[in-house]
Length: 135
Image (cartoon, rainbow, N blue to C red; front, side, top):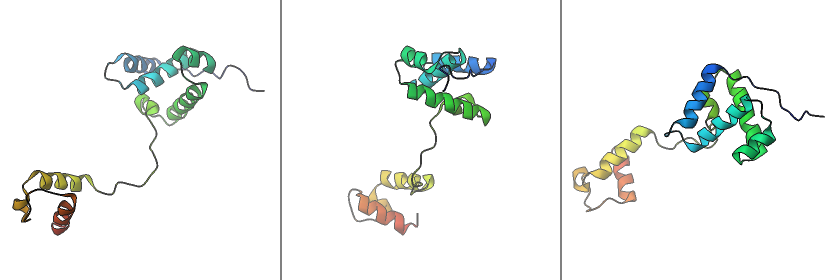
């Protein structure tokens, strides 16, 4: 039968200080600050139910971020990396950043400068101009 109290996670002094800075900094995204609060309470020995009640979140969320914190610390990730979202799966980007910058530069100039006999850019005309320029 599993125990009611999960095993304690010791939080080092510098980690604790960085967590408190993330919580109190005005520019910290709220989801990162909430995750930092979870880890601080985990480090103080609270169980999942108490943390969930204190922060008005689910026990599942507490368990998730506790496990991510533990695995991140084993891989020696920084505090912020441990609290950040994991990489999402999906197809890679279709266009490179350089191609997008070229698109913006062409779209911001007049079509006559690119030799197009139109008054305004359309998506189709931009695509034709980019292909013609081998971008």
